[in-house]
Length: 484
Image (cartoon, rainbow, N blue to C red):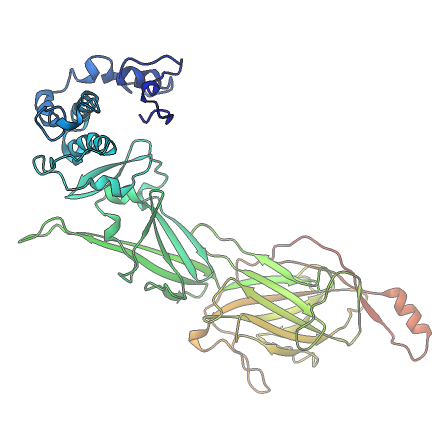
């Protein structure tokens, strides 16, 4: 117990009732919770819980280095009573045996107290076969861990209160962001299985883990810490893959009992998504937030309408925006949260519908099989498959007997290293349609509508020389729709 840190050691052992406990045992018992499990502290009731200690005499002899009046701690006896430390030493050995460095830790506790008082203690560790320094001090075991030795190596074991939600995978969890990933594992579960944190590394052996609150963290990114990560594609997802490995051989010589571990993990991202945008509602951008289960990544899709061919001036929603029939509208589709050096965005198809339903039977195709629809000579594919941004434009129109237009696109991602991300769109060449991509797990967002301004149309029709129709952009926000 550490007391109350008020600088007065005389009132450290105060019970919950405010009275001073007679000894350490009474002090500990007074604070025992009524919810404690049966048997908790049951060995503490009589004679400091040592009545059933089989090797009490032997343990007392080992711990007597603390109280020996001619021993290394004799000069400290006048300044700090050694009896409580001696009793704690015997108590700990009776409960846990001298194994796992328990004796060394118990004697070290008294040495630290003497050192705080400014006393130099002669060497005592060699006689007890203790290390020159307490290895447990460097490990910083957490509240639900305890320091011990296994196969000649000190580490942190899990205590009975340690949370084990998934013990078979060492309570692993993965976080994926763009082209980087972090995997976290339970340090004490790994150590109990025989794997010390210092012996583990990623595929690149120079990439070791870092400890944080009892967790062992491994991290990779695609910039300056690749760590042997490999980028793969299976046709439906692209994945950043790596492996945590380590070898432990506790026996040298003629035979070997080497243990090894290989934990494969990955960050997976879907190659195919769909998004829909009605160019009239909140026309600045259309965003799809794609969140996948633990260990899988997410990225964002945006569809943004522009008024200029340089894609510098997006349509804003601070007022109703009017567009003339046959006026050119420029559309940009962005994918954010992926590595633009490795992955590109491809527009497979884009189409318009008169209602906010991507599968509505009345539709007009703008892009088909990654190329402009030959039936609409106004469609221009500005950029497709060369970066994370795809762009196209078309001239505004209206559906017969309808006043609204909604825009939808089917999008997928492509790994640039395959060198087959750009479609060839020219007469006599058919764009590829057969590839190892299946369209599924789609999402849609609708913004709109783009509405025909009937009042302006009537006025224009009655005035010679004026335009016959205008389209007015009505700014309002609809809810996102899922496309299956």
